[in-house]
Length: 175
Image (tube, rainbow, N blue to C red):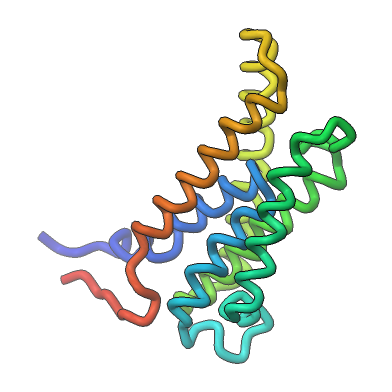
């Protein structure tokens, strides 16, 4: 059986789908998880790139604090909906940055990874907003309480995504 190029996709494509999905749910979660991983598994693909800051442990720490702050701020009554233009823009940027950095770290196209990340973050934002408001309306549960469940899903999903990654420094080539 001949190996196809699709075997190379998981190293870049699928993780970006996962990170960008997180970005649509919690904008700071995607860069926090990606930076956590990249700071422990630096890769030469980011050398000389403006995205290399994501590999710095200090950046990973700051992004984790920002992600925790977002989890809290999300429950406050004055927080705008995720589909508000300024909030949506932040989610698209988050997905784009993480997608670009992940692709670049794997010697791929930062532009391609960024576009994929932004597109998936957009879709995830719309879908997660619909689920959150739909669950709240259908079951009469406060939106903030549904948000707590969403937080748990983001944290568990991010942890699972990181556990499933091969170390960036290892060059894996299928037979």
